[in-house]
Image 1 (spheres, rainbow, N blue to C red):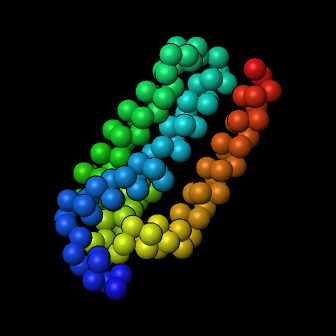
Image 2 (image 1 turned 90 degrees about the vertical axis):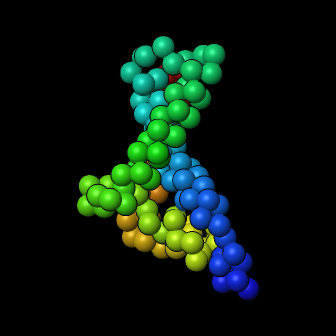
Image 3 (image 1 turned 60 degrees about the vertical axis):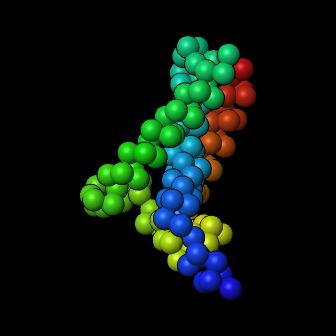
Length: 128
C-alpha cells in the first residue's frame, strides 16, 4: 500500500517534501546554533522584535535552496548538505525520515547538533 501511495506522488510534492526535510533537519539546526552563538558573543542586533526568528528562517531557506539546487550536480562538495533520500519519489514522507536516520553520518550529525544546542542553551541561560 505504501508503494502504491508513493507511486502516485507528483514530482512537485516530492520536491516540496525533500526541500522541507532539508530545511527542518539540516538547515534549521545549523542556523539556530549560529543564532545562539551570536547571542553568546554579545551581538544584540538580532535579539528582540523577532530578529532571531527572521534570521534563522531566511538563512535556513536560502541554505536549503542552495543545497537542493547545487547538491545533486556536485555531490562530493555538498555531501553533508544534500541528502538524496529526501528526494526519493518511491518513499513516503515517514520512510524518507526513517531511511535518513539509519545512515551513520546522519546519526552523528543529529547527536552533534543536540549536544551543541544543549550546551549553548545552558550557557545562554546561565549568562542571561
